[in-house]
Every structure is written in C-alpha cells, then in structure tokens.
Amino acid sequence: MKISVYGIGNFGFAIIKHLTVKFEKNSAIKLFAFDRDKKLVKHLQKTNQHPNIYKNIRIKKEVTFTHHSQEIFEGSDIIILTVSSNAIVSVVTKNQKFINQPSIILNTAKALDYKSGKSFSEIIEKIPAIRKYKCPYAVLSGGTIASDLFHHEPLGADIACKDKKALKLLKKIFTSDNFNIYTTTDVLGVENAGAFKNVISILAGIINGLGFSYGSETHFITRAAHEVTQLLKKKIIIDPYTFSMYSQCWGNDLWMSCTGNTRNREFGTLLGKGHSTAKALAIMKSQHKNVVEGIHTVRALNKLRINNRFPILKGLQSIVLKKANPRKTIWRLMMSNQM
Image (cartoon, rainbow, N blue to C red; front, side):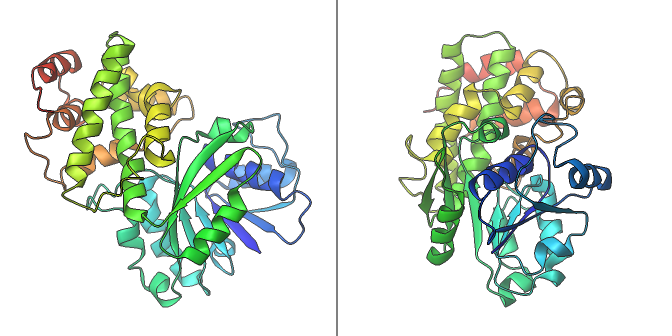
C-alpha cells in the first residue's frame, strides 16, 4: 500500500511520524512525502530529521521524501493533504493529471473556501479526475494539534467519508495505541464543525488578550457555538452526533482549540492585546506559524450572508477584517443577548 503526504509542515510531519511509528516494521506500507521547499526535502532525504521543528527526532522508517508532486498523486492508495486551506483546491486541480486510480483523498485542513463559502468536499468532488476515478473524499478533524500527535499523546479524531469501505480502511490505517479514530459519513458536518471551531477559537483568544476572565471566555464560546449551529441549520442537515460535546470534530476540538495552545487562539490573543491582523500574522510567521486557518472561514462569512441574528460572528468579523476596536466590540456584544 502506498500512502502519500502532501505538505511537510507542522501537522504533515506529525502525520508522517505517527505513520512511521505504527508501520515501522511493516514493509508492505510505502510512505511518500512531498513539499515545494526543495531545501527542506533535501535535508529530510539526507537526515530523516526536520530542520525547523522537532530537530532532535529522527524518522526511523524509510520515507521517500520528494519535491516531485507526481510521486504523490500517481499510484497512491491514500493521499493526505496537509496544506493550508487556501491551497487545497489549486493543489488537487493542478495535480489531477497524475491521478490514475481511485485514490482516497484525505483532507486535514479545517476551514471553508473563502472565495465561495463552500466546504472543500463540495469543490473537490467535482474536479474531473476525482469524478473519473471515483476517488473517495475524506476529512480528518479533532483535537489533535501537531505537537501532541508528534509526541505520542493519547488523542482522538473523527474521520468522515461517504464511502464506507474507504472509511473502514482509514480507521485501520490511523488508529494506534495512542490515537483513537471515530468514523462518520457526515462529511459536510465534520468539515463545517472543524472550520467554525477555529473561528470561535479566535474569539476566545481575543477575550483572553483583553485580559478578561476564563468565565468571560467560556461565556462567549457558548454564545458563538450557538450562533454557528443556527447558521449551519440554514446550510446543511445538522447531525446530532457531529455537533455534540462528545464528538471529536466539535466537542473535543472546540474545547481544545479555544482553551489550549493553538494558533487560532494565539492569533486572537494578539488581536486582543491591540495588534492589527497584519501585525499579529507577522508575529506568528516569525515563529514559523505561517497558517491561521480560522481567518479563511471568517472571510467566508461574507458568502454565507450573516445578518443581525448573528451578532457574535459579525462582531468577530469586524475585528479581524475591518479593524474594529476589540474591547468596544466585546462590550457592545454583551448587550446583544439574542440567545
């Protein structure tokens, strides 16, 4: 079996580490990994170590590191996309010419397409090669930040796919002694849950950055979660499991992302402390944290036509995209008790 990872950033490298540990002694599993950064790939080929993250950890199982995307998309049984959400559609579109079998496409990004407001399944499933070879589309989502997965912490995640045979295979591949995988066919629900928990995480960070209490954070988290589910009822059929507190893609991930050490929360905290969106992103980039997925979904809210029934989401959007004063906005939202 050939399993390929497209993108060797923080989460991509954590996925590679996870799979190499599980299949270290299984020669039947062939692992490939791609990145556009030729210098990074050359370093990995030479040392089996990442030059920027977890520098003292060496990958034990043989992995074919390549800067040729054809090696990832051609002949792979599973293609794992670990790139930022704004690159997913272009990556699959550009490389569809190399697809030559019904490869499973597993997306790990948690955002909506900011240009259309659509989930990525709605776009990728219409790409000609995906339709021609009937490639199953799947999404992985849960409270699984890269460092926790890399360091073998006990974690859980949901994988959603409409193809039950592919779903069974993905569960088998990813489940390990430290990683529980729960399966569902609710692809749209899991995609939206993952995307919007990042939006709420930014909000929680803003509250924290303003110096308000933990109780203030949880108050706004619950109000925002309510708005999200009301908004999504207009867009998709809400699965009770997907948006429950015991699901991995919503309950677990919402809790972890909003109160843990995550990029979206950190970005929000910087906004709360008075930094502009551009400055906050620059600070994070200087720390090799180039991607804040929640921003893309905040931008996508324009396509979802949110109105005054969703004051929290509108207020957050005004802070992130329109330079609204965070403190004044939060106090104004305190007066909009529309739950």
